[in-house]
Amino acid sequence: MRVIGLMSGTSYDAIDAAAAELTLLGDELVMRPMGAFSLPYPQELRTRIAAVLPPATTTAADVCRLNTGIGRSFADAAVRAVDELCGGAADLVVSHGQTVFHWVEDGAVRGTLQLGQPAWIAEATGLPVVSDLRGRDVAAGGQGAPLVSMLDTLLLRARDGVPAALNLGGIANVTVVPPDADPVAFDTGPANALVDAAVGHLTGGARDHDEDGRGAAAGRVDQGLLAWLLDDPYYRRSAPKSTGKEHFHLPYLLEALEARPVANPDDVLATLTRLTAVTVADACRAHGVTELVVSGGGARNPEMMRVIGEELPGVRLLSSDDLGVPSAAKEALAFAVLGFLTVHGLPGQVPSCTGARHATPLGCVTPGRRPLSLPKPATVPPRLLRVAGPPV
Image (cartoon, rainbow, N blue to C red; front, side):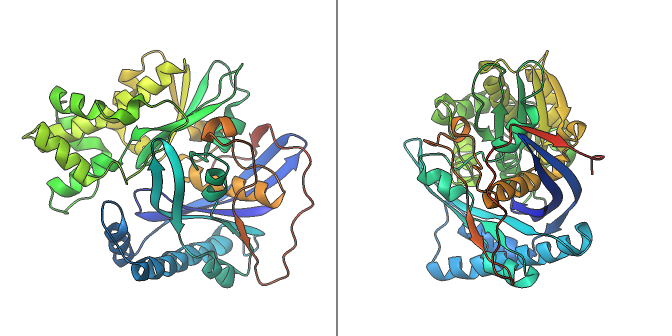
C-alpha cells in the first residue's frame, strides 16, 4: 500500500509530506520510503495560526476559517505528494493536521485540537484520508502523545542496549525501548519552542530561529536563568506526560527574563539551548539510555546536538537517517504508518508510552471519490519495522 503522511509540528512553518510503500509480513512491517518534501505555509496562514495559539484568545469564526485554510494547504501538499512522490498513484493519505491546543489539567490530557479539514484533502486527491489521530488515544485515557512512539518502538526494538529515539521539534520527546520492559515515551520539555520565541522577540521579528545554533554558540549560559527555567514543575512530573506551546511560549519566556534578566541576547539563546540538553539528558539518564537516535529540526542544529552530547557522555548519538528513516521526514512517515495500521484494524499507539488504558486504532476515515473499501483486517500487529531500500 502506498501511503502519504502529512505533518505540521509546533513550529507551524511548513507541512512535511512523505510517502512510503508499506507491507505487513507476519509480525514485521516493511517500509520503503519513496521520498519527502516540505511545503512552507503561506505567510498569511502562519500569521493566522500564530494569532490563535495560547495564550491568545480567538473566536469560533477564526477557528472555522483556519480549519479551512489549513485543510486546503494540506490538500495542496497531498496533491503534490501523489504526483511527485508516488508517480500519480497512491492508496491513502494520513493527515496529522496542525495542533492549535493541547488541553492538560493536573497532568491529565482532557482534549487536543488539530485543525485542517480532511474533506479538502479527499476532494483534491480522490483518496481516503485518515485524520484526527490523537483524539482516540485521549479518549482511552492517554496523553495523545507522543504518537511517534509507535514507529520508534518498531524501529528500535531489535537494537542492543537501551536504545531511545529523540525528536527535536518545537517540543522534545523521547521514546525509550528497554530490552526487558515496556517502552516508555514522553515530552521532555521545549526543544525549539523557546529558542524560536526568543529569536523572534530579540530581533523584533527579523528572524524566527537560531540559524545553525550560531547565536547560542556565541553566547554563555546564564546559570541564574537556567536554574529558574529548570524549576518548572513539569520536569518533576513522571511519565507519561505531554506538553506544548500552550505552556512553553513567549510570555513564559518573558516572565523568566523578568525574574532573571540577561543582557546579552546570545546568552539567552545559549541558556535555552542548554535547557533542552539538560532536560533531554536527565530523561535519558533516568532510563539508562545507551544509544540515542535523533530526528527533527533540532537535529540540524549543530550547537544543540553538541550540548546534548556534552550532557550525555558515553551515550552514542546517531541520526535516524543512519537507520534508513530520513530525519526531516520521520514524523510524516510515522503518521503514514499510523494511518496504515488504522485501515488494517490495528492499534496505532503503545499504551505504556501514551498512558492509554488499552491499545486502540486511531483516527477518523474520510472516504475518497470511490466507495470506501478497507483492507482485510490484520490479525497480527507488527512487532518490528524493517526499512527497505536506500534512505531518502
